[in-house]
Image (cartoon, rainbow, N blue to C red; front, top):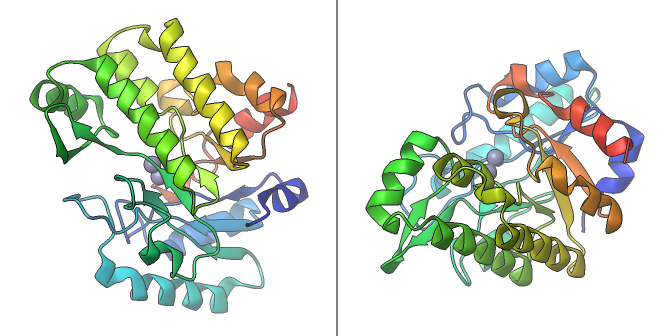
Length: 271
Ligand SMILES: [Zn+2]
Ligand SMILES: [Zn+2]
């Protein structure tokens, strides 16, 4: 397994979660590299949304994977003496056998892998996978169309998908582990402060620790939504479990590559 702790003790300036032209990022990989070098980063990992078995405009196509690897190689040749670049993917866990542990991802020469859940099954059709990530306007429409407005089903299913992903394994970092909390709490205020919700998060933490995964502190939404994933109120669990942590900006724009990271690191160091 990739040793993030060894790396992240060396420096606070890194990002292991970056989206570029190979998925829904808004700039070319090279622009992220030059921005990172300018800021003094030592490590930068690219994580296109992985090829996926369901219809998704944000995920990379399998046909582009070879070009993606070639582009990392080209950038390593150009910039490798100034920054360490990593080939990775943010791999979607879709359903049993269709996630990071599948043969397809296991045979790819990735330096490390983030495992994430962005899709859950519709309430009346287990084969219809619905994107519950992204903008709240879209989420609200899907709540009516695919979930009969049952927000508790959506939250519980998100966390059970996360748990299944962790149990199946085949990746290194647990991506934005309670991300459903944002859309769910927009849909129903304070749902993420209810005891049953809290228990789902704590149970997931325990499961992640049982399997010895690294936990991502995802800072993408800090400036806009004042929210980390996992939520700030769970940072004490990171300490209690002595969890291995990486702090990632989940950047889709080069200018946001360090967005929220230093704030999170400061809070983590103060625990
Ligand atoms: Zn994600
Ligand atoms: Zn991401």
